[in-house]
Length: 424
Image: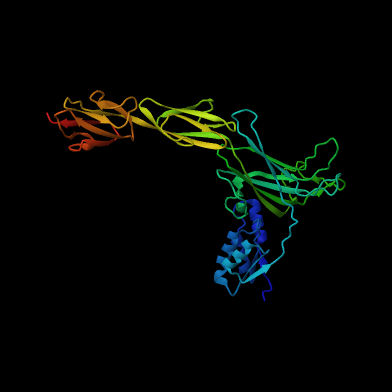
């Protein structure tokens, strides 16, 4: 029977509170083993507030060469995720322990705030009550430190994704929204607004579909007023813990708010501009805009000199330069413009040539019109028709040079000249 098994959860807790990889759980395991301890214990929780699933796997790999000399023990509450991990790792021992459900956690309430002015971004507000209420109306409740991480995603988030070891959950230092804030339920005094928690508010990006936050709660271990129970922070502002005021990590709560942001983004390929009927888009320069929910936006594509409009893709589709977009969430529209090239056919009295599609300004029918502008990428089919008593011989120049077939297909990538030859 193992007489000593060292639990490395606190090392992971310290690392998680700092962000990054220091102190290292694996370095701690190596130090403990080198010191002679015959066992290592980890306790992965569903909220990943201590060791993560990856930590459990990394420690297992580090201890594999020491099997038989150092025992690996995984402990935790009975839940499907833990049982699957135990079956995967196959530790020397698995210790099942009850989980305490009374730990205080952040419970934010989300709401969308419409923009104060049309065209501005809406905001998402999260009201976070103090995790623990006061014992009586005239006293302050227990104080806790709260740290908040935040990210915006371009897709909706499902409830099953809100797990602490999911890489999608924000928990890196670069994703900290508020480093530290003291939250404490306050006395409900008549005539004075009760401020009993925290407020998180930020504008939404146009293509945001979900805002994900991780709220971490830590014990406050500083002084309290003996009468009111108000926290008496050493810095007098309670904006960050001073020495001796930051206690143990208590809980982590992963939350997400799936949102709709009525907005429009236009992208362009090639040389041209896109404008909207409400003047919110002038792309050119302004290619994104927040719109009113339910608005109908009319977009017009205008090619620059030497180019032609080809088609819309995205929320608009097709070659018509005028497009109508109904806005009830974020919409993406792309306009493609192409360079113009000349397709020229030599005129002949012995026959004519027609094209199966119109050019940018007119239709080729040579007989009469023998040079027409087409957008790059156009595929034009030419058909040579001999005059009465004449016969088509072949083509000269272009992609059908020397072909005796009266139908010629031309892919427009440059100025192209072609000549039909008929019998004289």
